Amino acid sequence: MPQRDHSETHVLSPCGRPTVRRGRPRAEATAAAEQVVAAGGSRAAVGMVLGTGMGGLVERLADAWTMLGVETGWLARSTATGHAGRIACGTVDGVPVVMLQGRVHGYEGFPPEMLTRGVELLAALGVRRLLVTNASGGLRPTMTSGELVILSDHIDLVRKPWGDALEPCPTAAGDIHAALYDSDLGERAFVAARRAGVIARRGVYAFLSGPSYETRAEYRMLRRIEADVVGMSTVPEIVAAARMGLEVVACSVVTNVARPDAPEHTDAEDVCRLAADAADGVWAILRELVQDAGPPAAPAANE
Image (tube, rainbow, N blue to C red):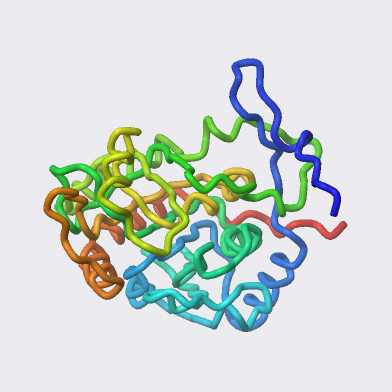
């Protein structure tokens, strides 16, 4: 099989940073969005990806409506603990919001293009502003389980072509590495969490493929490369969302703290429980982000 030429997708800007061509949701994602609306869902300017243990936030939506993602024929069924695989539409303080109640991961056997389908669907439903959440391991000794880390950057240790399956926008290009995480919205998220009485900080997320948790040596390595939290998701969604021009805020819930010399046993059920305990802080961030989100993006024109 011939190798795909990425030369028109990843080039260097004059300052040496990668310049990545913009993209838009694939036609199948647009068709899935139309199916969601026809089934009773709604378009929204604000979207959210609910990570491990965060699924209960769907119950806080007003006028909530849900459907299984697999019913669209576009989203795959997650096999991971704490990921229900539903699409949820409703309102937050009167503003329409659409949520993905769970995600799929590369360690479940899915290829890179499957990991971005959820955010493509959200973009096709009109989402302009995206909040992505995850459960993560804390790498700083001063951290406590249940605190929030608003991401300012990430370290991708998996290195796949995230978002390359998007439909290309040939006339649009930009240095997305300068805008992966919206700094102004990130600051608002940080302040909102603190105002809600939740411990929060800014930090860098290290992305590993999983599914196993890290070894003691890996924890030490991650600290040395200045990561603050570590997890097995989020980065593919962030990159794809940025390539589609979405405003992105990402929030990690620290569910265990890495202490290589005094390790603690952690399993998936513990992660779900501890992440759920942080729901109030995440909800406060969502309420902040809906305040001035504006109307949903217009549906893509048929070509």
